[in-house]
Length: 170
Length: 104
Image: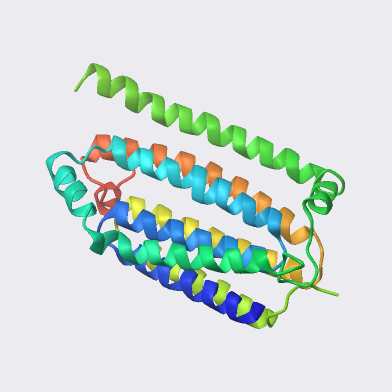
């Protein structure tokens, strides 16, 4: 049973990725990309990594995709953007990704309904991950914090120049 | 023993297919937003391979590498999207071929 759930989620992940990278419209591509990330989160859950599944949804499908949405909004497509917005309300554009996401949701409900609540044999719990993360891997945590700091400073530098100049010149 | 109930090879093939999708997208698309999306797909497929390996042997290491990949992806995408704003402002396009000279 768990195998078929796995292969369905894998097929959804692969097809959503292919559809995302072949769209012409960036907003439509984002929807497919979010479905693909949700499918990978279901795969993580089925493989006995619930912590990784939660982080995949929170950070990838949440934070990183919101950054993409903000940038697409800031680029301000104008009149063409309005036309796209109207066309985006047509069912043709959201039925397929919506159906894929609903399929993943049904899979997740099915997996949670099982008595051990996890269809994989042995789960690696968040407690084990945390213990290893702040035990043998504490140096990696420091490196990741330095990387995030560098990313923060770089993004602030690039974004601040954009905001100040577009306010004064244009 | 491990918690992985499908063959390890199938998960690795899926990760390889997702990675090739991302690589093809990166090489074929010229819109910088789609190139960044392709990078995300590639990082995500690498994370999938790590988590699958961690699940196979029931160890937490795979998920820790996943956390590090997550940090790399977040840092990369924040700087990359800042660059998108700069390129859009300077060249009035999202086509990467417009930005193929080092001195714009």
